[in-house]
Figure 1 (tube, rainbow, N blue to C red):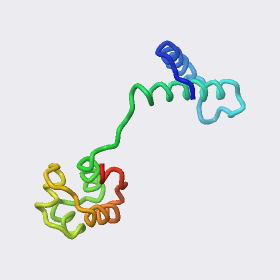
Figure 2 (tube, rainbow, N blue to C red; figure 1 turned 90 degrees about the horizontal axis):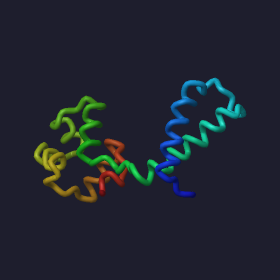
Figure 3 (cartoon, rainbow, N blue to C red; figure 1 turned 90 degrees about the vertical axis):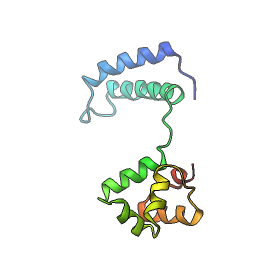
Length: 119
């Protein structure tokens, strides 16, 4: 994969803005504009992966999101994870370390990726 310069990135962003106006989901992939759209998008993506990387969300953020999605209060989450409300508070404040056993339960019950739990 080749590196993309800032100048190439800016040029690609400007062209992408133009292409967005004429290329949509109904444009055939064989269309030259569709092909150019993909090429320009790839240039933008390569540059942004290097210069604007997006890291993993924190465990607190993901647990809070799951609580919202599942309509859980802390006491409900504590019951689901077979732990105490104080432990849940500790996890959310990053004051308590998660044990391997608790990590497995969180992964299973909340469907949270292990990389996020163990980061």
